[in-house]
Figure (cartoon, rainbow, N blue to C red):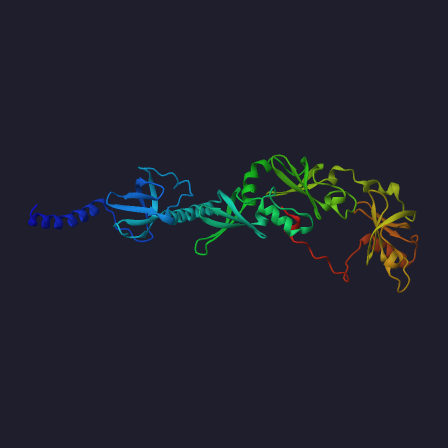
Length: 404
């Protein structure tokens, strides 16, 4: 070929290439753009893509992202997207990255899931005292302890943090169905909830129940405030301590053990929260209390608890009563603990009975007609009232006891 022809060819090629770009309407990509290409070479070390028939891009090294199923096992002819990280390498090719494209696509998917409240699957990577570190593709997120489903919530008696942490660590490498609670690409923040996903899936099952329904299940956890039981198709409900029995209960563990079978009545459904009552299935002993106890009759009773305002007294297995401090015959300066001891039995007189309110008042002497006696009887009817001089117990953290 003559020098003249070579020069002509060199002048024609750029023009022809420019016309080709114009005909195909392919704009020159910029760094950060996502481009679509067809795989022309696929190996363990690199993947080359044909970009619109006019450019070649290459993915290699740390950018050869293969953890997502979308990018694994690519073969010749497959179409895939990648992000431009350099406009030209040493061979004149576009340098591309699957990881950037994967990250961007993951955030787009997460945003759609957040807006539509769709359920996604994440994998647990790590555990800490506050919850679980999870991953969605290459995007890390956080699942707080409080957002675990009832089935996975670490209810540990006594709030033993080491046991709670061991329970959380047992989820590492497991997959969980969750919903996105909070999302911010700028802050690189992703917070998810297994409880919301669980609630969503349980809607149809929960709809089969209503207040008044009787259920039978197994105790899955016993806490200071009540008992959780599992029943039906993966449902769980709470029997509050006040709904376990008609009598006063100090510790649910005295009555119920994990694994015990229980029957209960549904008394309220609040979303995915189901509240139960065991005592509603038991005859109310207070309906016949006046047949067992009469006003001004002496009766023995065992002191269950000594408080600054009076005594909680057990008259029998079902009936617990109150002896107000004003009815205990204390001398000036005499302290209630000097005269009465929890666990011991004493003789009392019945000075008030309120079956509907489940209250019975006691005194160490029979009810008289004096103003003082009448005031004492009224105080017993009104209940213990306020305890201004006693500091309330500090509530235990919810994570230690478990809530639904």
